Length: 250
Image (cartoon, rainbow, N blue to C red; front, side, top):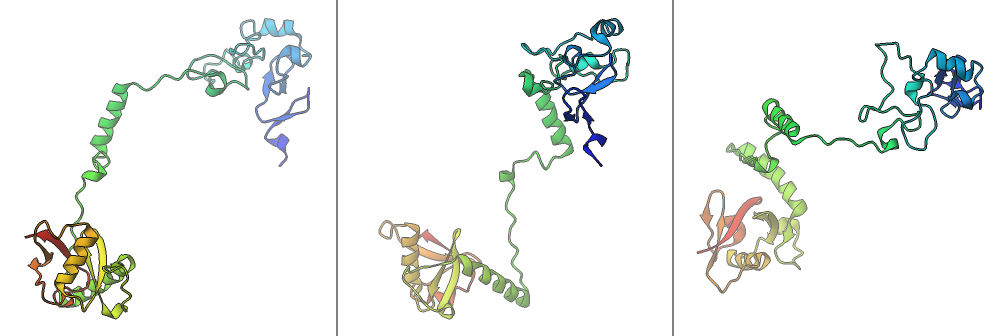
């Protein structure tokens, strides 16, 4: 397939154009630069064109300082089924170069507010889930299995997740993984040496969270099941991996 199978070659400048414009006087197709009667030495002559199309033959592009003929000038005006070669915004007729609204600085009217409101109401009626704010949706509660086998599998998976984001409770601690207890506190994950007492873990957590130890007594509480931890006992004996604890005032 050659370019001429889908386009047309202007007989004036031999340029191949994919938007050829038909001259009704000489019955040839031209590019946008030579489609005017006086631009290609029309064989039919301007007089015969004026007689055949007295109202549209001399119609020029509506853009100021453009002398090219408009696309509407070369459309058959006696056809009721044709698509008008006019701008859908301003209804003016332009040449091929200025036919796009942006090319002739067309003023596009903004959509009115009532129309926007009607569109929102229609969306809310047919798609109620999309009209609700994403931030208003309540987070889904994590259901912890009660079956011992499923619970062990659940803790194993959660432990793999927490290991990737947990930070040492003591910044310089380099204990081996087997000697660590991984736990959550708020939205943060920590690990502590299994040999640390609960009181020491409480002091380190308060420091990490920027809480004052002198203002009021603090206590460490395991969330599920809720249990106040004994400060003189080992932290690892009272908390399992992936458990969640909170620091609160007594």
